[in-house]
Image 1 (cartoon, rainbow, N blue to C red):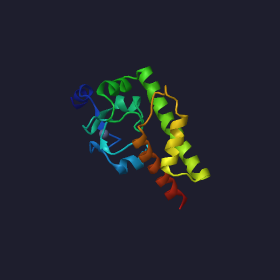
Image 2: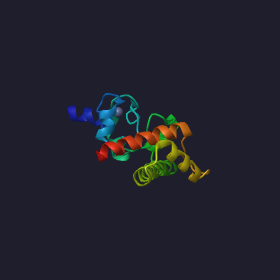
Image 3: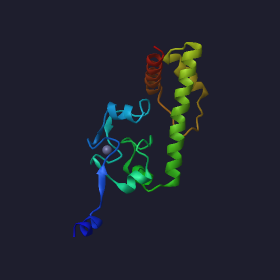
Image 4: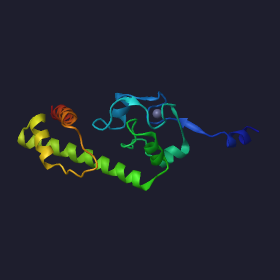
Length: 155
Ligand SMILES: [Zn+2]
């Protein structure tokens, strides 16, 4: 009887991203190695419920960068449904961040540039048709964070 029952009950597991707390904090971000890619906030993986289905875990990697609470809910649904176009967008987003981080680290290490100068230089190289970009102010803040981490790494 128990087995019969459990077959019908939709099985859920503790959310592996927020560990069931419904909130992604810096501990979670460090654990999943997303320091430069996420900020603390409500968990988009379990949508703030702390529980997820096995299907979800099988379908979407827990550290899938693009799936954050900043996305519209329709976009989150598409990721969970495995929509090709949305997954491609996620891939481009990840690439955009990785390239930006690499660019900043290079300029900082090789040319000893500060965040403002790197931002100015970066903006001159930016493709206007790019799918992702950052406002200057956010860009400078982001670059400062990248440099800060790099500096900590070197010390
Ligand atoms: Zn969660």
